[in-house]
Amino acid sequence: MVAIHYSALNHAEREIRLLTVQSGSTKDRIDCSLTHVSLTNHPTYSALSYVWGNPEERVPITVEGAVVLVTKKLWIALRSLRSGTGDLIVWVDAVCIDQTDVPERNEQVAMMGDIYASATSVLIWIGEADDTSDVAFDLMPGIMNRAVDLRAHSEAGSFYFGLSGRPWFNRVWIMQELALATDDPIVICGSQRVCWTTFVGAWQVVAKEMFSEMGQVRYLGRQADTDNVEVLAKIKLDLLKDLRRHVRGMGGGSLRQLLIFSRTSEASKAEDRIYALLAMLRKDDRASIAIDYRKPIAVVYAEAMAHIFSIGDGPDFLSGMWLSDPGCQISDLPSWVPDFSSQAAEKATVPNSVAFRPPYPRTVSGPGADAANGVVHPDMKTLEIRALHVDIVQGVLLFDQSIDGCIRQLPEVEAMAARAMERELSVTDEQQPFYENYRRSEPLWRTLVSNKRRGSGYDVAPMSYEAAFRAILSSAKEGEHTPPSLGDEDPALPVSEYRQTLQEHLPCRTFFTTRNGLVGVGMPGVRAGDQVTIWFGAPVPFIVRECEDDDTYKLVGAAYVAGIMEGQMVDELYCEDLADAITLLVK
Image (cartoon, rainbow, N blue to C red; front, side, top):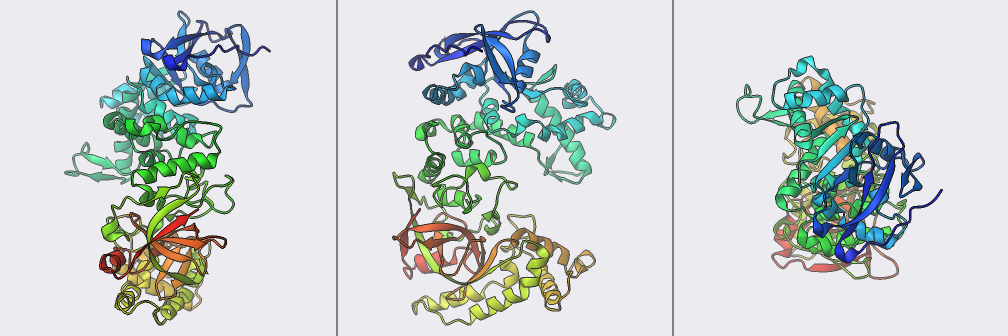
C-alpha cells in the first residue's frame, strides 16, 4: 500500500488542499485527486462536516493513485455524496490535511474556521438512513409550514428524538463547522437532504406540539395561543441552533460560553476540547491560545483557564465546573484547572459544585461580585488570586452515596451544627458580633439544600421545607428506614419534594463545621484544617489546602457556607475595613 505524497502547503498564502471525488455509482470504487488552492482566491468547494468513526474500521479509496485507508464512516459519506454525473470538490480534514505532519496540522486546524466559513456550502453528513429518516425528511418542509398533521405522522417525532444516537450531534468539532458556515448548511441523511433552517424549523414545530402535551412548555400569553410558548425541555439540536445563532449574530462567543455549550460533546483528542472552539471566539480573542498538538494537555487546559481569568470570568466560571479528582488521568494538571474532557455528569467521578450556588442573583462576593480577579503565572501552574479568609474547617462528615444513608446521618449533622454554634469565637472583638450573626442567621434546613427550591436556580427554599425537614429528621431519629410520605398528601408539608432536593445536594458531599462555628456543605475531599475563602468575583466560597513544602495552596473545591452567601462578610467586614484581603498562590 502506497502512502499519499503530500506536497507542502504555502501557509503564508493560506493554502489548503481540496479533494476531488470522481463521479460514479454507489458500487464504483472511490477515486480522488488533490489540488492546492488559496483561500484568498475564493475557491468554489464544499466542506464536509462528519464524524471520523472507529479508527479500526477502515476501507480503501484511491487518492492520486495511492490506496488510502479511510474510516468506514467517511467512506460511506463519500460514496453517498458523490454524483453520478459530475465530480464532487470537497474539503475533508482526514484526507486534505497530512495528519502525520504536526506543524501542518497545527496550521490547518487553526484555519478550519476560515475553511468552513469560506466554503460555498457546508455538507452535514449525519449518517445513513434508518426506519424513520426518509419519511421525516420528506415531511420537514410541510411541518415547518404547518401543512402536516403531526398526529398522523409519528415518524417525525421518532426521528428527532433519536438524534442523540447519531454520533454527529455529540462531537465537539461539528460545533464550529455548523456555527461558522456562511450559507445555510445542508443536512444529509442517507439520500435525503434539507437545509439547516428547515431541519431546525420543523423540529421547533414538533417540539411545541409534543412538549405541550407533556406539560413541558411555558405560555407567554394566553394559554390558547399555542404559538406563543417557550419549550422548557431541550435536546442537543436546540443547543446547536442557539450556538449558530449566537456565534453568527454576535461575531463569536467567549471561551467560557463555548465551553459551557460544548460540555456534553465528545472529542477523540483531549486537547480538542479547547482547540475545536477557538475559531468561534470573538476576533480579538482568537490569538490568545495557539494550537500546538505538541503541548501537554495540562498546559492546553491551563492556557484556556488563563484566558478566562484574563477577561475576568475565572472565579465565577470555576465555581460551576467539575474539578479534577486525585485519580485524574491528565498528569500535572493544576488544582485550579478543570479536566475539560470530564465536564459531563456521566464522566465525573466527583459531584458537581454548581449545586452550591445560592439562588441567583445572590453571591458570596457581594459588592465584589464583578471583580476581575486572578492572574495565571507564566509557568501555567500557579494562579494568583485575591481572597478573603473566612475560617478553618474543624469537623467533617462525609455524606453517604445514597439519599437514605444521608437521611440516617441527619441527626449527627444536626448535633454537629449545634455544637459548632456554641464554640468560643477566636476572631477580633470588632468581628465577633458579625460572626455570631453569621452562624445563627440561617437554619440548617436551608443550608442543606443551598437555600434553593428544587429544580430552580432563582427561587429560595420555601418555608414549607422547614416542616418537611423536621418530619424527615424525626423519622431518622426514630430509626425509620423510609421517610414519611406526607408530602404526597399534604401541600403544606412537601416531604417528598424536600427529600428530592436533599438528594440533589447531599450524596457524596461533606458537611463541615469551622473553628468559629460556621457550617456548610462542600466537596468530598474537604478535611479538617482546610481553609474556607471567598475569591472576589465568585458566587460561592472556595476551600483550599495549604501545601506542606511552600506557601502555596491546592484548590479543594467550592462550598456553601450558611449565613454569608448573600455577600454579608464582604460587605460588613471587608468593605468596612474589619478584615483584610489576602493573596493566595494556588497550584
